[in-house]
Image (cartoon, rainbow, N blue to C red; front, side, top):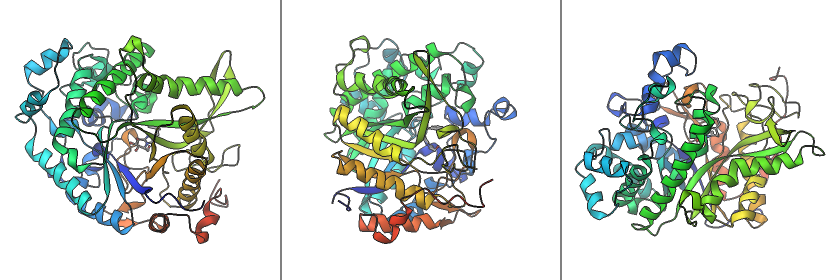
Length: 479
Ligand SMILES: OC[C@@H]1[C@@H](O)[C@H](O)[C@@H](O)c2[nH]c(CCc3ccccc3)c[n+]21
C-alpha cells in the first residue's frame, strides 16, 4: 500500500523551553533549565553553550506565524509542551507540599479548583489562546505535560551538581510523584477540550540517563550516580502511573508517554547478537513493562498507557562485552559531524548517523510486544544546509509506512521540528527546523518544508519523490 491510512496525521513536535522565549514579555526564568544554562561555571566549563533561550524564536508571541506555516504545509497535528514553571512560578501551597511529602495528597476536584488561586492566570490564558488557535485551524493537538524543565521551587540542579544536600532535588525527592500527578491533572482539568490526546512526559529516560550517567551531555544536574539514576527512574514511573490514573478520572481521551528510542545493531552479527536483546530490555522494556504489565515493587498494577510516543533519530552500534555490551563511537549518536561513518552513512551537523531502516524495526519491536497505538512523536536532523533533510524525511516516512503495512497501528508522524529552536546544552547551533528564522524572527522555509508539504497534502510519498527514499549521495561536501 502506497498511501497512508485516511486518518493518519502528519505534523510536528515542539517544547516550551526550546521555542517559547524570544521577546522580553515571553521570559520564563523560573525553571531549573533556565538557571542551568545561565550558570557561569557551566558556561566556563563548556558544559553548556552559553547561548541564551531568551534569544529563541519567540513562539509565545508569534505562535500564529508558526501555525500559519504549519497549516500552509498541510500539517494536521501538533505535539506541544506546556511549562510547569510558567503556570506555577511560585510553589504550591504549604498544605499541598506537606501532604505530597508524606504521600497523602488526595487529587480531587476541590484541590484542583484550589490551584486556581495559585496558577499564573496570564500564562494559563495565553496557553489556552495558543491552543485555541491550533484548534481553529483544524490541527489536532497533543498536550505534553513535561519536557525536562522543572520549577526552581522543586529543583536546584547547581546544588545537586555540587553535592550540596537540598530539598529541591527535583525527581530525586519522592514528593514529586504526587506533585507531578497534581500538576498534570490540573492541565487536563483546564484544557481537556483543547487536545485530542495527552502525554505525561517527553523522554524520561533522557532525564535520568543524561542527568546522572552521561554527565558530559550538559544536562542537569551532571552528577554521576547510577543509584540516583535508578531512584529518578522509579519516581518517574510512579509519577506517570499516578498521573495517568488521576488524568483518566477527568478525561476519556488517550494518555500516553513519549520515549527516546534507538535501534540497536550488532557490530558483528555472528558474535554480538544477544547483546541486542539485553540492550533492548534495559533501554525499553524495563521502563514499559512496569507501566503496561505492572510492577509490584513500584506499586504499579499495569495498564497505565493508552499510546506510546516513539522518538527516533538514529541507531546505536553495540559490541558484546562479557555478559553485557558497550556502544561504539563513530556510529549512531556518536558519529563525527558532517562526515561518513565506517558503514558509508552520512552524519548530520551534530554527527548523528543516517539510519532510516531502524525506525521501522523499533516500531515493530513495540507493536509485537504491546500492541498499543503509536505516534512517531519525534524524528528529524540537524542540517542547516538542508542537504540531507529531503532524503532523511522521505526515507524515515517510508520506514514508518513499511511498519504500517506490516500491521503496526501508527497514527501519525510528527517531525522534530517545525522551526529551529534552542537545542539544550548545544544552544542554537543545531538547526532541526524545516523552517529557520532571521534576526527579525521572520520565518523562512528550507526546501524540505516543501517536500513535507507534498507528502502531508497527498498523504503519500508521491512517485516524483520516491528517489529520496535512499542514502543521500556523499560527494565533495564530505571530508
Ligand atoms: O536533539 C533533538 C531533539 C530535542 O530538541 C528534543 O527536545 C528531545 O526530545 C530530543 N530527543 C532526542 C533523541 C535523544 C537525545 C536526547 C538528548 C540528546 C541527544 C539525544 C532528540 N531530541
